[in-house]
Length: 228
Image 1 (cartoon, helix red, strand yellow):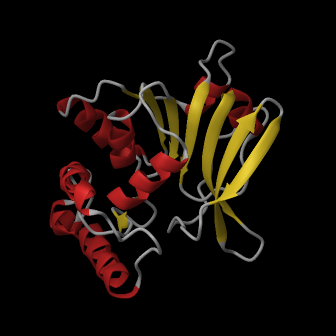
Image 2: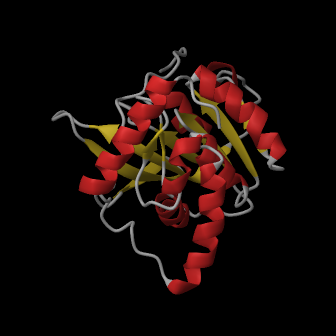
């Protein structure tokens, strides 16, 4: 994967080294022997969405920065939360945020369809070139506002906010099918965040904690729409 500049490359490598030395997300570093083979395969997929100099870290259990605002989750993180949100081959998924390339590829292999709103324009162009080369035709890059304001839009089974948000837009909640799930890192009043799993049941919501996991990014600014 290309990177914008030598400065960005060195910054990403420095941040990764700091994460490796001082931070390992709780509960995400352990894998069973039976999972190790698939972990290695998914790590190879993850490497495709990292700068060349960060390929040696593809198997690491940490988020890897590709620039100052975009992070690539670990295989462990995606495996764990795919289970918790019930990802399967019948689900239509929407991913919104920065650095979404690997997450979209991982979920495309395990779902019916993946729609992606990548907010980093440079990364979006790279992903749109890369996804078809690895036979991931189930991924569609979309415009956030146009999709949500389309009265004929399809219902969503899963929504994954790929970065910290301040609130979940009403249009996203409306677009979710009954029984659907939202995975959202929400910022709190103290400047921290809570990774929440929100399950829709008719007009009621059941909210679960992400058990201490966090998304290492500043709050993302979602494109405006009439009801956001």
